[in-house]
Length: 504
View (cartoon, rainbow, N blue to C red):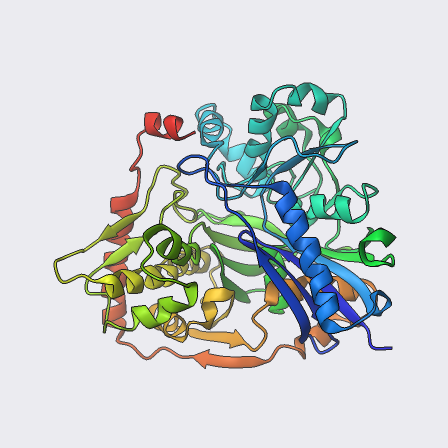
């Protein structure tokens, strides 16, 4: 009987489920978008039930489209939008609030207070992270401080916290498993990067009861089974990883110095730095990439908050395109950006700036500017922001990149990938299978149940779709990047502290 791995990919704007075969090829998939809730400027939320219903719906949809039986699924792997924070009642399963999304700046005032109290350096040394509203810890503190009765219930052990992976597993197992893997835990700002356990000093500082936190487990390993009522038969849940770590695993970046960039809602560049964590000196994050058995791999990461989401904003906010797929055609209606630069700091700037008071800026507009120029500037912003990350990464690691592996929705844009190669002056390599996030979750699950024998076996599945080599003038690219950096400076510190407090 042919067996498959079912990967559940719960993302920021949609949920996907993909069935993979032994060659790492998708044989069936399903995808559903869900509502983005924007209560105030800089705040982003999701209805928790939307996450569950869309994910379980796509899982059942993929199984139906594949025409397979539950007993043909060897294991389930889960990957998820990271840092997004959910708190729910242990008995009823009902959330106490909408999910606070990773993009949300709602806890910026808490972060400002932590910085002013002098906690930044020791938190960075413990966690590998900067103090920022991006991470789960301050979102959780916000919920405990602002939802009536939440703190008392949490202290009595009546509430559970989890990132999206934890919540999905809790629902899939009908409350039997409350776990998270090391890659997701490393993004909460509550885990010690070296011991890979929840840190009591951090929990005390933030006022977070340890009893509400999930157990931290390896990324590859059976943690439980889906309840029989979910798919008609219990299936092992054997792989868990945050989306960017999963994509890095799916790209088979198993060697020290290998790197990938994902062009999704945000953009995320990760470089494998091996089994020892090294703190960045250039405002990158040090994070757990994955744990397979007892072997732990760490990465340097640069996180951009708004990449592909800028296209969604052009579609839904400005209405200059009808569908996201129109962006490349519109951008190519002009020969260049016409001097227009778009810094998409719609929810602040991530790495390497970490400026929560930055806001979106379009500069260089003249009477000759049209929709095409704005579209092109928006597309180019993804490449410019990636260049910011790679530059910092190379300085931290001392390793000059010779190639960058790419994936994510926007990587299908050939003109963007060529511009990226020109800007970085390195080869950009796009695999045939772009769903590397889901593939990474499948690989982690499959390794745990013996579906694949080893990581070396996974390398054989990686196949090149297209390679983009630098072809533009280095001087031209340098001048454009200099102008980009000038534009970034214009966007920074836009909000005064009182404005930030008002937004939150």
